Length: 211
Image 1 (tube, one colour):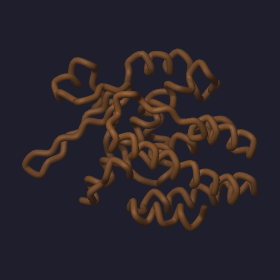
Image 2 (cartoon, rainbow, N blue to C red; image 1 turned 180 degrees about the vertical axis):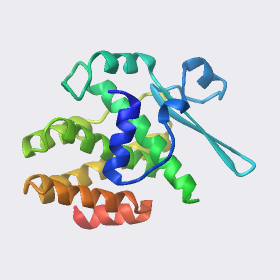
Image 3 (tube, one colour; image 1 turned 45 degrees about the vertical axis):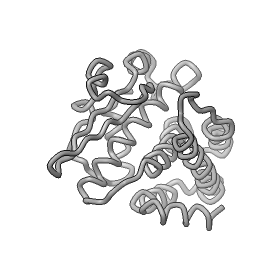
Image 4 (cartoon, one colour; image 1 turned 90 degrees about the vertical axis):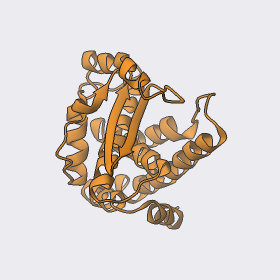
């Protein structure tokens, strides 16, 4: 599954248009090194601002993209391509959300980006496979139940990823209970669109009240 198809799917689901093609912003490892990042994970959105203008670049492990090209998740999603698919979803989710916030002239925190990406991973995988309770539960366990974090994360980064993971687990549990179990997928999509447009404080408040 190409990044373009992922972008189109997320934008259609949320009924938004960035007017950009994520593929135009993808860079390789050498180009990323010119930004001198403190970390070099397999997926990374790089943001710089100068003169009131924001510049974006997205790095996704080329090996992951090659695997997805050879093993299309829309045809079959399994252990052979799930990890790389999640990586691609995360990158495209970060890119779209950053662009939308920039165009709305709304500041966005790293926690907000990570939380939305975790939700997008769950929903995209669920819709690619089958929106059934058993699949939803298996996805939640796989994505959030036993999360592991890179050893090179500092304390603030680890706390941010943990908060995103824990809140995504609570929110997707709510989605499963209220919509997937009741086979109300259309209603779930409406809820997701509403959630997408909330700021971080409103998202966290909504999750806390729903849990």
